[in-house]
Image 1 (tube, rainbow, N blue to C red):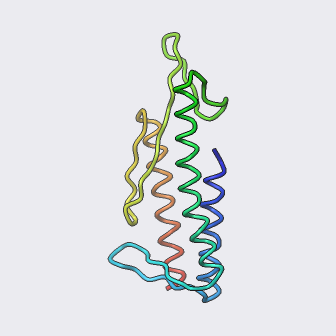
Image 2: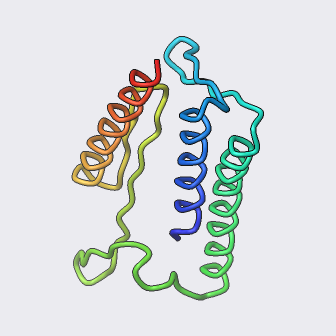
Image 3: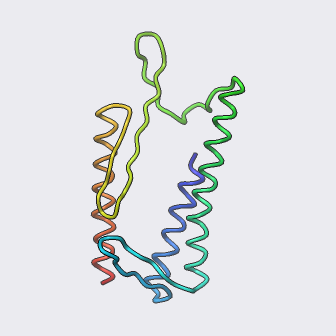
Length: 133
């Protein structure tokens, strides 16, 4: 589960390093940051981000195939909550549309946590863009 996250974070770090060293540029299109560069560092960062999406998608597909074959998810992947004798999976996420976070979750608590994470992420991204400008 952590492999796609590690690839994504590694890609972001490499792109930030490329921008900081002057090998790549950041510009804003309305409120969306646009990164461009031609250095190997920028290319590797972009490649890691694309690979994180591919690996994450493949892990989801393989997990679904395992569940369809009668298996179970590996322990610890999803938090379990006891609800009247059965287990219930909790989930949540945040989609960033520019600097605006859109949060969702299986219940109000998870959605609120995702919203807070989205707001923190938006503030960090806007702070980095302001520092680079």
